[in-house]
Each structure stands twice: as C-alpha cells, then as structure tokens.
Length: 248
Image (cartoon, rainbow, N blue to C red; front, side, top):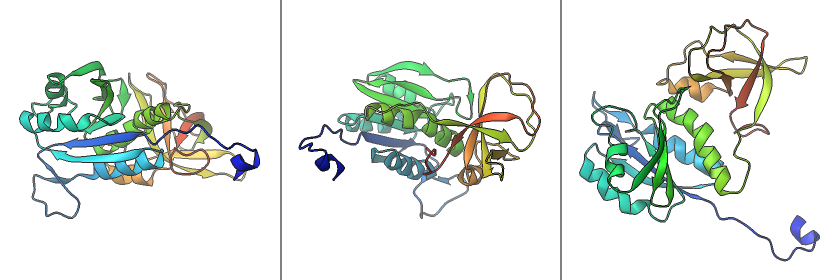
C-alpha cells in the first residue's frame, strides 16, 4: 500500500534464500521417536529451521545422514539448487566427523576450519561448486550461537542486507572471570532497570550442551580474547536474542 501511494507500480524484490539443513550422526533420531541409551533427539535441525525462517530464508530439511561416507556422498546431488548449505555435526576431528573429508572428495573447497570462539570452535566454511557451505558443530548451543553469528549473516548477505549483528550496550549484573584466547559469547538474561539501562546477568553454567540455558537466554554477552576479569556494573556489549526491535 505504501509503495502504491508513492506511485511505484514496479518494485525490485529478492526471493527468500533456500537454505539446506543436513544433520549428521548415527546417534540422532527424530523428535517423537523412541530413544535408547546411545541416542539423542535431533534438536538442531528443528532449531535451525525456525531460525532460518525468522531471518527471512526458506529452510530445506535434508534429514539425517548416518556416519558412513557413502550415505553422505548420496546426499551431495541434493545440494545443487540451494543458496546455502548448513551441515550440523560432523565438523570436528573425531573418526566419525566425516563432513570435511567426504564433501572434500565431492567438490568442497574449504576456506577455513576452526575459529577462536566459544562456543563454536569447529565451525567450517567453504563451497560445494558455487554453493556456499557452513559446517556447524553438533553441540546444540554451539550450533545455535554459530547460527546467530554466521547463518544469519549469510542470509542477510543473500538478501542484500547488512550482515553485521546489532550490538547494544549493557551493564553487567554479576562479575566475570578473565577470558582465555577465544572470543566468548556468554548466554545471559537481561532486564531494563528504572534508570533506563539494560542489565545482563550471565548464566552460572555455560556448557555448550545445555540447551535449556540457551533457550532461556535473552542475549549473548560478547567478550574479547584475553579480556581481564571485570566486576559487576561494568559496561559490556551484547547481542539481543528474540524478535524484539534489536533482537536477532
């Protein structure tokens, strides 16, 4: 309606990027299926599909690929015709982490593998033919944080938008110990104070397998490598999560 009021009969548009999601692992089962002691539910594909839709993309779920080279090789033809491939799991250094090795024999050109951040060190990026590929860790929090930082940025770039995540200032509500050599993204809860300032309190436990902590988080506190210990009340930079005006 606004475009019509301005007498624009034609508008340039972009279609939603098609993002293929490919989970790997013998241990994965779909939600609702019975579990034995060696299995876990594939929550990553569900979470990533919701994120992709929220950021303006179209999620194409390619299902679960078992830890066998021939199974992963069979899926590679399905990677054609999408705008971005996101693999979930299989990006680390275990004997069953096959994504890099198998896709490497099917045209994957790797730009980088492993980054100095926490959570999310095993992240990889490359191309399969002319299709960009992001390989995310299998740990659910690592996958989610990497998605916030990298999958969102890729979708924004495909849509012609600014890929930089919006950071806002906040006040730390609890002390933090010194950081190590990796850039850290701490899951935290946030609240607006009567003085109009945003106060953020990091979760007491930051283990990358604790999806409940991530689900309850309002934001990520960004900490530089080798940052010194800081007391409560220190100014920090945060990435808000969710669908609010500054949420991503």
